[in-house]
Image 1 (tube, rainbow, N blue to C red):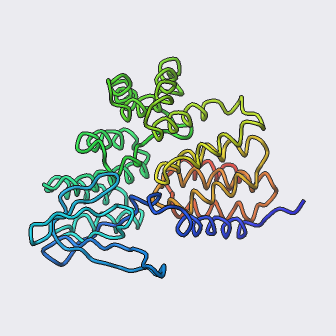
Image 2 (cartoon, rainbow, N blue to C red):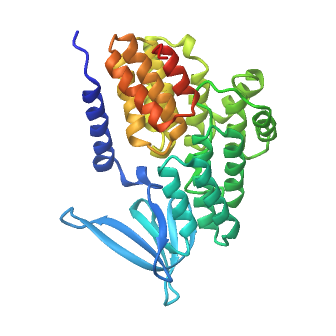
Image 3 (tube, rainbow, N blue to C red):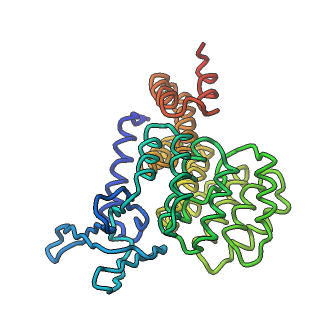
Length: 354
């Protein structure tokens, strides 16, 4: 049977990205706007909307951003009128005196995660606007995860929840989606979160971190969350339980796993996609698993902690298929993007490199 090349898989993943952008409802990209340093004294919110002839029209609103929730942005204009803009239509927010925020972003994109964290923390300490503090916390979470600092990512996520339980950045929850050693700091934070009443995100974080080591305590919490009225929380809890049941997975179970991932909000899918790829690989659907992993890498480039794992798993599959050249290319990408991650060390050992 003909096996698709790595380039075919990458092109397929790019097609999936194109399909997401053009065929999915706009709300699936609700948090994908960028925040950058502005030159005006006012906030500038750039939106993209479809006209009657289905052409994309850019429109700029100026004023002061007062609040951002998971669905909408509130902007007070110079005439005192407050307008509501659906988050799905927003592409960029340019906000004044945000130099440190932009510096952090440049450091992050350059792989300088500790410098990014420092810049974002300095900006956060001086910040008075909650919506900008939320953005800065979410960026710190991403950088801490990229540095494999789950404990600090968890602390920042709890700060985010305290600021706004309906934040547009809840998708940054640092849940565990692959094997990871739970440090003492992680265990203490997880225990603090596990049984907090009426705080499902905290409960989910705690149960996720304790699932591998204290499953008897974590599973009942996840089972309860899987029946939550909040369907996104319920689906995440269900996928957390599934990642612990790979050994019991049968062929007939896979479609339900894939459907669960598809029902999740776009911003909540990266971790579950990793679980889905594990399921496909376990059932010997290696090419399908590679497509899922390439989709994760293509659609979620800022999820560095998952990106390293996705590259390692892709390399393992191509190595099993006897495609050492492709495996080497994936290893070199790991070396460049994640030189200090354990996945790179493991990949080097698997390839038996000096």
